Length: 201
Image 1: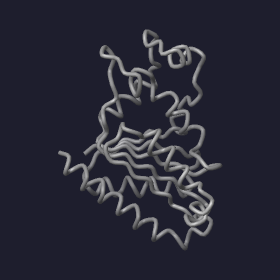
Image 2: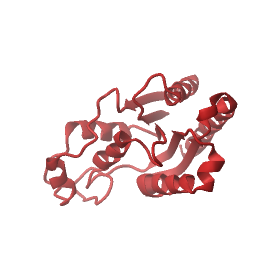
Image 3: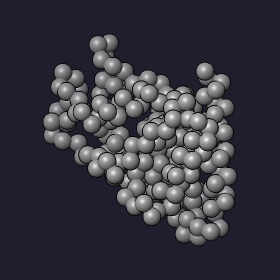
């Protein structure tokens, strides 16, 4: 099984980076292949250029797709499962992750497909994992959790994924109280991925 993790966090000292390593260890224990697009480490260009806008904004698919975007397409096409991992910053993912969607979901590939162009395949499993300082009950109370889930699962993942799931690892301001619970949630996610994808094979 091939797992692709789109990871967005600038610090290797962060709890989000710790979650990344937990995921990698769990997947490696299953003998699954793990590919990580570490957006900060790779200095991913998250800002769409004027040249790209000419292609995307005007649906001019005769213009070329940048090489770094094509590399992300290659990773997607090789994946059985794609996981988006990031911290919650001001009610959404970091700008680096948002820029990944802006550029990688290119016209003709992720939407607006044409018969003569490569089309994004339907991924068997898509998971969104975000870490958050506030506890989950507070994020639900003020509606942020529901808003994030709507945007990530219904829009950004959308019909491009057969099975979709979002995991909000909240309460990190009191990390010692939630670490074990978070680990259990991640373990359950890995089991779900295994079950769903094996059934699809």
